[in-house]
Every structure is written in C-alpha cells, then in structure tokens.
Length: 280
Image 1 (tube, rainbow, N blue to C red):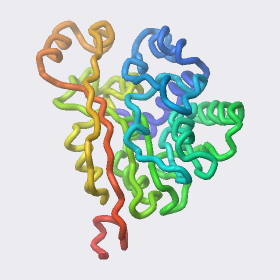
Image 2: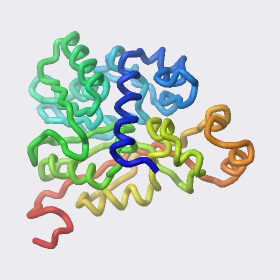
Image 3: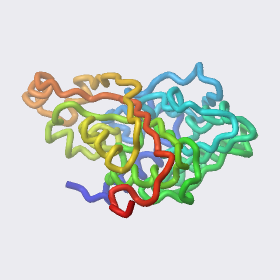
C-alpha cells in the first residue's frame, strides 16, 4: 500500500501532465497523461457548457458533478473551490457572486495553478484568486469563506477527515459546502484498490458512502444532504487493465456500485471549539 505522500506525488505528476492538455486531448487519449489508455478520468464528467460563467479553456473534463448547482450562491459572497484545477468551477461561481464577491481556488499542482491564473487573466477577472496549497492544510484563515465547493477532488486526498476539518475551519459560522465526489457501495476488488492510476482517476481513492457522510458529521457539519446521486459506469475494456477475466466477471456480479454524489452540509451558527474536543 502506498503512503499518503506517495499518493500525493502520483496525483501531482498526473495532473501536471493533464494541465498541459485540452479537454479534447484528455478525452481522446484516455486521460492522455498516461498515453496508454489506462484511466479515462473524463468518463465521470458532467456537461458544463450551458452554465453561466463557463470558460472552455478551463474545462478539462475532470469533474464528476456540478457542485455549484446546489451551492446556493449569492452576489457578494466569498467562495472557496477545493482542488480548483484550471478554474472551471471558480468561473461558474464568479458568474453568480459577481464583481462584489470573491472566489478563491486552491490546488496543490503548480501547473494547474498557472493554467488557472492565465485563464482568469484572459477573462479579465480581478476577484478570482488561485493559491497553491493542500486541502489538508488550507492557505486561508479560519471563518473566511461563505461557501465551499469541490468537484471530484477529495477522493485524491489520503486524509479525508483532515480535509473536512479544514473545510469546517475556513467556513464562516452558518456557511455551507456543496461537494461532488465519488463514493462506493460494496468493496472494490484488490486489483482496483491497489491501482495507482485508478486512485488518480478517483476510483480506488473512493470510500463507502456511509463512511463519507459519517466523516462529514463527525467533523461537526449539520443538515447533511445527498442532493444528487449518479451511477458511474466503467467499461470492461478499462477494467481489464486492472482485473483478470475471472476477477472482472466476479466484480460485475458483486453488486459493487461506483457513484457520483453531490453532498450539501452546513457549519452551525455557533461553535465554541473544535468539534469533538469536549471543550464546549
């Protein structure tokens, strides 16, 4: 089993290469960063093209949902996008919060940050900012943002509990998040669990839906709702890269489901300490 730091390095390398390609290149080369038709990340993506604020240069097809759809954004708010990539969700959020609002994108991949900054400059946005950093240690002060969004990124974070703790910390009291992510129902075969490329493709990094939601509650969030749930279909020719024919048949008969979910949750109005510390 790879360590957390090894997994982060895999993600950085893969997404650094993806950052240099267009959405079309990623789609036609099976996530082109591999060149070997191994993991097609774009297979999970939803269509952004009709959304206000959509910027074609920022859409690399890397998401698994439309988190802004349930984010209840308002003009003037400050929004944080976890794992902001080339800026796609940031620019959609900016179309709602407007000139009086602010959007901050955080990503741990230097190439993505640079690409997002170039896109923001081309669009003339002065209230969209991109910061290099990790989700488990966000480069923001506490109680800073009104809304957090994220699109198929927390799967790439080895310590998901710490990621949710950081999300809680930076949100203002009564703030909320809308996060699209990948979860499981049933256990993945060992071949998929151990596949580094499938981790970077958000599959082997996925955890059980009930565990995911329990982490959100454990950190202190309330009014937790699954707003949207969609089955992700992985074609046999992709799975065959990681499973033997017998393992593939066993997996298909197991009932294991890989789902995209969009989760909404709120930070309570009054907090006196870190949730679970017993100081209240």
